[in-house]
Amino acid sequence: MDPISIVLMIVLTGAAIAGGIAYGKKSVPAAKPEDLPRDEVEAIAKKLASEIIEKAEQEAEQIKAKAEDRSRQLRREAAEQENLFVEREKALNKRSRTLDEKSEKIEVDEKALKATRDNIEETKNRLVTELEKISGFTREEAREKLMKEIDEEIKNYEAKLVRDAQKRAEETADEKAKSIIVESMQRIVTDYVGETTTSTIKIEDEKVKGRIIGRDGRNIRNFEKGTGVDVIVDDSPNTIVLSSFDPLRREIARVSMERLVKDGRIHPGTIEDEIRKAKNEIAAEIKKNGQILADEAGWPGIDMGLLKLIGKMKYRTSYGQSLMKHSIEVIRIGAMLAAEVGADVDLVKKACLLHDVGKVLTHKVEGAHHHISGQIARKYGLPDKLVNAIEAHHLDIEPQSVEAVLVYLADAVSGARPGARKDSYEQYIKRVEGIENAAKEVGGKNIDEVYAIHAGREVRVIVKPNKTSDEDIAMLAKDIADKIQSTQTYPGNVLVTVIRENRAEATAT
Image (cartoon, rainbow, N blue to C red):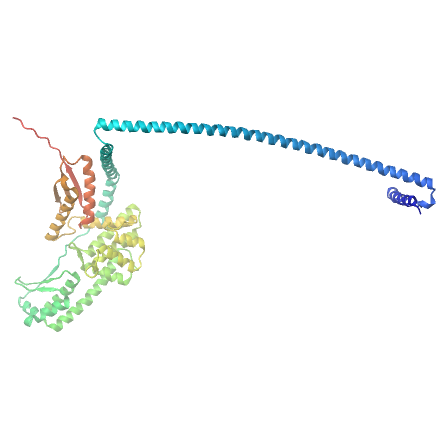
């Protein structure tokens, strides 16, 4: 079979398949190529080839058209990108020229500024030289004089601020504070009886003194050894005096001695028995007193060790004032103040109860009593806020709460009220002299006279008017108050009054 026949068969086969697909269910059998004449087969083949070529040419035209469209689109996009790049290049060139112009201008301005600065410096130096010639001061002398004047102005300004602040504080707080404190004091006013370091026992028969002394002083020595107090048996009629700075020991001795005098049988055996019984009774009394104080402070669950410690306050004094009575008074004042200002009343009452508990141990533990009070509070695991309120009531430790300040105020009110405390004559003189000396130390040569009045509760300082100004005295008063507060011991508060008086004199002839 020659190649043409093979091509014709392939073409006829494709045509038969296409005819079958086109005419669907027609059942006319396809003609075989060898059954057709050669001319007819060639005609059919040419016709199919022509159709295929025509279709291919159409598809090629479509592809070409699409390719040309795509090419035109790409050329258009490329042109747009090129235009965009050109515009950006123009903008960058313009910006570059602008930056160059600004840089050149900055350089010119810097040169002009440097020239101006040099000119100003030269002018300044020339003016300084001229001013030094005119004023007669060198630069250093003028600076020192100026600084001195500025310091003086600042000092005057500070004094004015202090006066204004004090005035505003007094205007806004004085009336309210007085109202609160007076109302609190009126509601808790208590009686007061001063304590001393001796106890007096009355006897009906002078012969009892001999039995108290005993043979060769045996009884009195045993009694003094067992109680730790001094027994004074002198010419005072019907009187025996027990002397000790420890009120607890003195109370045990008093109870023991009264029982011995009443019984009449005084010898070493009965002395030891009565002292032992008195100690047991005082121990029970201490517990009872502690419970009274705890109830006053609203503290039912207080530790037993702390209860016994505060119970000993009845037998301790401060400036002749019973600690137990003072503590009750401070608790009541503190509670009233806390209620008035909306503070924690329970915390204030507990702090007021324990603020002076350290005085019970001052003869055993070294340190200030309020620091000892703080140590005791920490020992029993009390909260830090309560501990601070206890140990800050003399303000040498910074109060960290309103409650701490109220404890300080309550203690100051109780201790400062008339008749609450008393000093010995020697202590009084020492305290007054200390206050006066502190004021003199601060004022120095500017002070003319210093007087402590009102039992040391006020100090009046008279300054020399030619060495001080009205602005100086406000600062001087504050400095003296700070000095007294940091170096002196005193009950209540000390008012510092600085007086400056100008006098004009003339003589008529």
